[in-house]
Length: 331
Image (cartoon, rainbow, N blue to C red):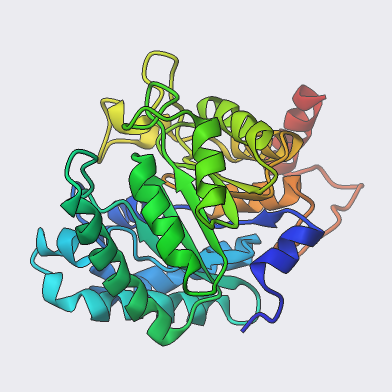
């Protein structure tokens, strides 16, 4: 288990997060497109462990428990509501196994689809679902909490208040679609201030918007608060016409044409750093190769392949030729 906590690490340097789980595991045949629920943690745990280890080897300093959409209400839609505890505990156990002493383990909460600003009773339903889910994760042990992908500020504030009562650090991130405002009409700046006031140690944005459309959100949040800022962008190319990837015609199971290159995600990491982000990770569509190039861009250690020096008296391989050509084109 890592000994230095997330807040201590953030005081010293930028922290590199991991990549996406649900869409990548769907591509590998372990998650159902559409519901995107995390029963894979009990049905095919080796798949989750393999992907988590890939992120650690790529340089991720935080591994999230694969518990997105893991609340009882969401799991009931696919017949797994009665196994919510088992699924959440397994998610943390797998993350901890992959992380070892090389990375922190973050518990994971997400939007519940139960929140309705016009229905005051919905707040109690949200609290109950988050309470149960987080309780199971705490049974195993987590280093801090990531509560993510909230589209209503009201629901995100509930998560921030609830999570902060555990005594663990908590990061809460909002998701924005075409318009830079939440479903309850709040701007990124208003979200950043409200979440910090509600007890979140790290506030920010994740998912939906590709890097070029999420970075302006980061800039606005950075200007609005002194809290740590987190960003986890999807590795998909969104457009000015459709700024959220779930609106692209390839969603949910034909997203390959929209996936960004490793170099584009490295550029995103550098730009996020320049804007003052403190926690920089990725989400949907981001695989180990993206995280590895982000690690290099942020001067983070990553597992490297063995190196060899070509014999100058012999012709280079085609691969070496293409590497030289790419270097020349970059210059």
